Length: 271
Image 1 (cartoon, helix red, strand yellow):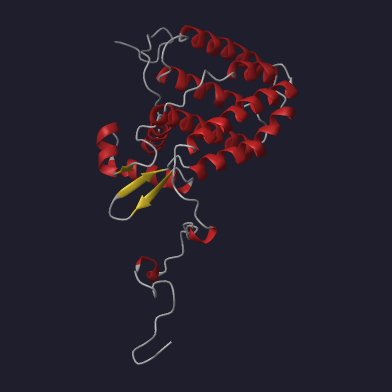
Image 2: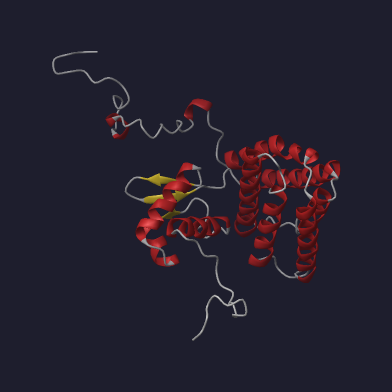
């Protein structure tokens, strides 16, 4: 009989597996959002996503709730879920986050084992970029940049900062992809190989310099994107109100009219 646990068994490469279907659904939807498919700002439904990606409806609903908690999507009553748009406010938020988080790279010290792995991955990234030179940047380069950016962010010691930096870089790459598709604002491959090498060799100042160069270039692309919009700048009070806490279930938030958010008079009572 075939021993599936034999160390000599041939393993066929396949997609990442998870013990929990909910975790698999979350990873699948995160990857799709970062690939701009569904596109930023688009409306999706649980049924469509479950059917498209072959996920159960319950697992899809749970994954959407988790993505909503971190702000990647937002529920739209009677419509579905809206993917986080790439707006001027979103680009400004990413830039502010990068200015706050990236200086930690200057003091990051990578353990020897991880440093060797980062050097190998840096060579792989640069080789893949050279192989794609002269061709239109597509999925291959986008996902190579996502993997290498995640590798570099993973070198940060502080868990919270590491997670925030990884997510900020991921969303920045998503924004770049969207700007290239919608506005033809294209860029060369990011110098992530140089960043990985600087971190692996303990050259914090050099790593921060690479990160700052990438951030300044991203800021220039964001400014160019804003030039395509003729939307008026709104007053601060005209912006959408902050989302209520999950346990705030006031009945009046779904009502219309001037009295929707205030106290309603009882019959025979005037204001």
